Image (tube, rainbow, N blue to C red; front, side, top):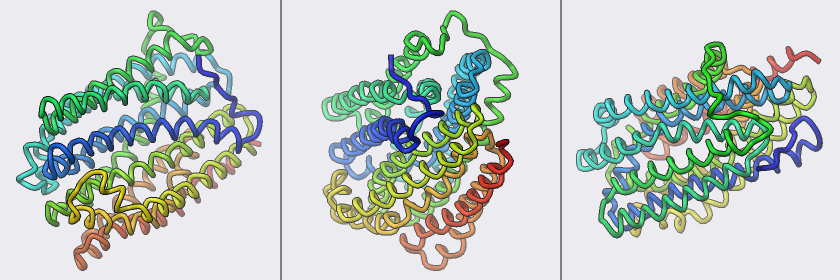
Length: 444
């Protein structure tokens, strides 16, 4: 059984770091295994396969973002009840969340497969990449129910302070993923379908492992498969917190789909270069995300326990560490960018295209912490509707305006990706203001 720390006691600096480090490794592994997928496709199936996979990144994250948001709602609610020591409501939330997350995965899988072709067509996916992109997309959609259950179990374990076991389970699943990549692509020559199939199968493994941990190997929760039931009030609570958070993540994907449309207006070489660089971006985002999860969990448990001072301290520390992590990784990746992008391709033109984006993003990553750290803290206080609205206005509406004005005028990769730093600054300022406002209303 994993040892869970107590966010309501002891040093917050130490607690947040101890909590976050396994999450960082977990997120790193997720990205590294994804990088392995793309690298194998790019190296053994060619630039066309790399471009096909890259063309689906944004729409796939639209669906994954909904699952991430719903799981973050589960995390916030369970963490609150753990801090408040309300075991009955905690367990009711866990049982109901299982059904909610599974149903969400099935619904999103179905919608994804049905809407695949029209969505990719609307994004101006290159004709030469279309059929491979559709095949990759549909197979990935089939793994969404398993991913939903993994996210559920991960959220529950994180809420009680256990971030070590999800790391172990992901490591096992990731090794299986890479092994299957090599078998399917190198040995069987399956191309993009092999990458997608390996990913979906490994997600099933991680789901089984984390569910076994929650329902059989965590005595402090005292929940069992044999006692499962569905509670309507708990479901409504989960959806009220989780759906706005999911929409927030999906709005990013929706806004980024317009960014992808801008990328698709360039050559196939540019599309492939951006697809390769995207994997470096994700590595930074996922590292920073560990501190947002820590912030939401620590804020949630201390909110439940009535520790107002520790709520604000948890917010400052988690957001501050995320900011410096983004700045450090941005600088590190830029100075080593050509070698890192070269992992995915031998084509120097593709590397050059990726570096144009990396130059802009390396100076922008840290700014996103102002927005994401504040939104995560607000979620820990049970607030998601207003933060989601702020995200929609700042990271969707503003980006659309930018694309149809600034980018439409200059029509360069640099002018396209400058929208990130400006949208993060505007949205971050609004999110900070909102968190401070609701924090003041928390009883002393």
